Amino acid sequence: MLAILCFPAIANAEDRSANQLSRIVTSVLEAYGGKGSVLKVKSVVAKGTITDFMKEKKGEYARYYARPQKLRIEIMPDQGGEARVLDGGKGWQGSPEALKEARPITMQSMIYQYSYLDLPMGLADKSYSVSYGGKKEYRGKQVDLLLVAVNGAPQLRVYIDPEKRLIVRVASDFDMGMGSSELATEYEDFRVVGKVLFPFRLINYAGEMKLSVITLSEIRINSDIPKEKFAPDPLRTKEK
Image (cartoon, rainbow, N blue to C red; front, side, top):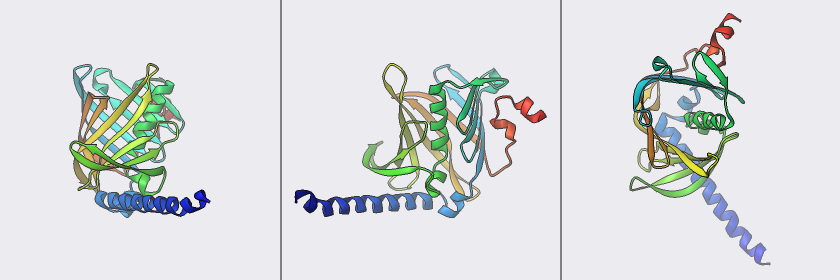
């Protein structure tokens, strides 16, 4: 009898949460340029510089993203740096000229990177299971928190600015073998590309430690990205 009496209250609470989530997602998509414009984004090429505070180095940075689940990131290739490539369920890492199969933790981090770069597009076409995580304090403000389930990587915590309705922070917890550690990325300097807003400055953290800052000088959407960008051996793929 008690369960029967409580059921309407539980159902009403779930309905309110679902309605609130729908309103938040709708407002986010509108802030980025509208659902229709966001849905048209199928690929992004972003270039600029990265400052690595751990290595005390600064160099070139390039990112190639394509839906579904294709990502290539080049970090300081001008200084013998690293490349990471994700193509669906496969991943590679290493020097740009000699990529090797990615380690499991690197695969998780690449899927995590792809997933947060896939927002808000993945919200527009409902690629992910999303729930409302309530209010959370961020930089002295009460922000809306979205919880995004990702296949192959830990859950994303997505922070929504209460006024601008933009994603300002994404975080996730990773098991590094000696306990859990939070990886997070904060977004700044939003600019319109085509009809959609993109952040031109990204700050990466491990816990409270600032790892790197990515400052973009160029973002292009829906350009043709050569298929070899998402392969472990670009020269061999190009020959085929």
